[in-house]
Image 1 (tube, helix red, strand yellow):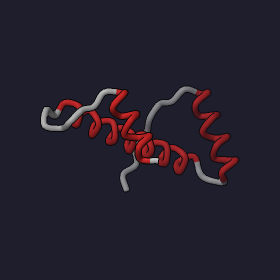
Image 2 (tube, rainbow, N blue to C red):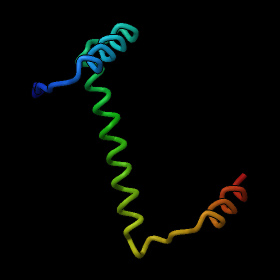
Image 3 (cartoon, rainbow, N blue to C red):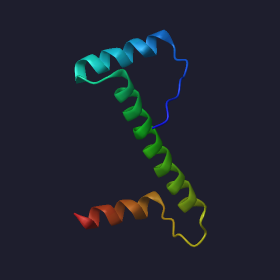
Length: 73
C-alpha cells in the first residue's frame, strides 16, 4: 500500500479525529473510507454524464419518467 501525505485545515482534522473516536477507527481509516466514497460517487457521476452525452441512449422528460415510476408501483 502506498502512503501519501496531504495538508488539511485544522478544523477538518478535528472532524476526522472526532469521527475516528466515535467510530473506533484510526484517522487513516476514516480518510481512506471518505476517499473511497468520494471516488465511488465520482465514478457514478461520470457514468451518468457519459449516458447523457450518448445520442443512442434514450432520454425521457420528467413527465415521462414520473409516469414510468408510478406505473412500476
